[in-house]
Length: 207
Image (cartoon, rainbow, N blue to C red; front, side, top):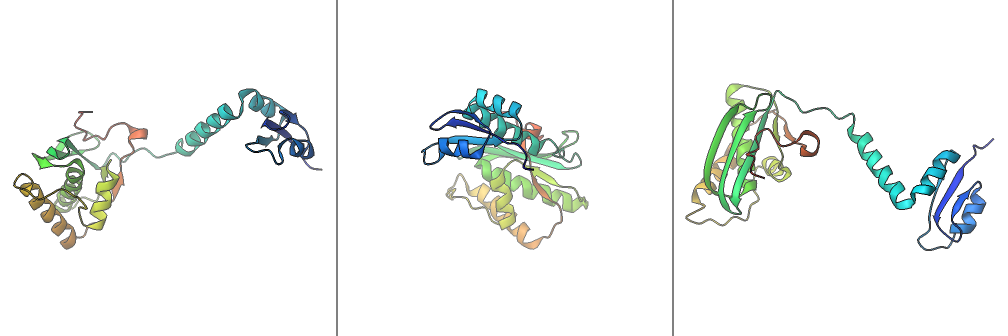
């Protein structure tokens, strides 16, 4: 025996809760923008109808997002976190790396003229070199998807012009790209999920 279903019609020829598909079909078939959904219990259908389709789907989307993220793993404390800060674009840029677990500063560079993405790129490479030198097999976190992509490409895909002011940062970019071409590493480079974990542990706190 088929399980009883309840059909909510929010927008159609006739709004309401129906107990058969045929009744629902008459109300929605051929109706532009019809809004309807089936439920397995009368109570669910009544709540959904009362909410209205917009609020119902807003709640459903929020619930799905929660379910997707509720079992996420926390960040790996035994790691390095890197971040950059830039006043202007381009402007005075600096970057740093910290031990994620304690926030202890491991390295810092700048300020020099550059961009935030370049700073993030250089920070990751600095972190990789730092770990390789010490033979540490721990990951690096960055909140810049762009910088992570550049590192994997082994090239900073920046449009920053080479001028007297940017000469120094371009020297660092070329040195970093060369390091990536000539060195291997097994450390993971991971995206820092600010939405889940708050600001990156290396954040300069200037937002």
